[in-house]
Image (cartoon, rainbow, N blue to C red; front, side, top):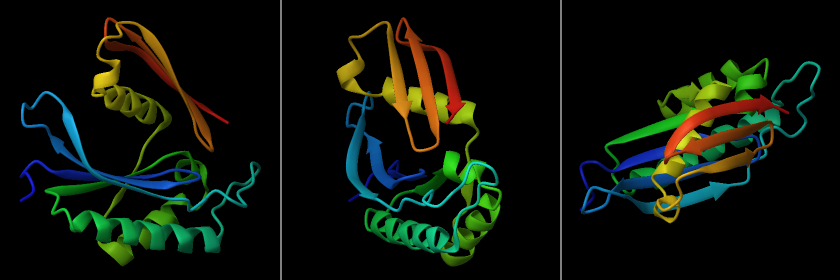
Length: 166
């Protein structure tokens, strides 16, 4: 029986679309991964830098991938499903058209993260990693298909988090 606190997150990136289903551990101190899946959708393929647009084929692939990940998530009966999109959708002139297509097909809304939100949320995710719990000060770098995030931790807290567009 799934926890009433089980949640699912779908992250739409430039190259891949990822699903994570998780819940608090029995102690409540950590997060327990229940299920994860990645689809290499590459929705940013064909996107140009002058007038960045998602191609019709990329949008179709993205919509189908998100639909499949929602189906997989529902098998774990999450309390909620949150879908976020990062630089490919954020930077594309037709990014909102893509989010509408997903919402029309699935009934789920996509939150397009700003660069600073993306960096901050990466940092919060890292803060839950038990392998990093003994580190007080460290720098995390996340290179994606369209942006580069730098998160500086001091005393196990996010000191600074920035996102740079590629």
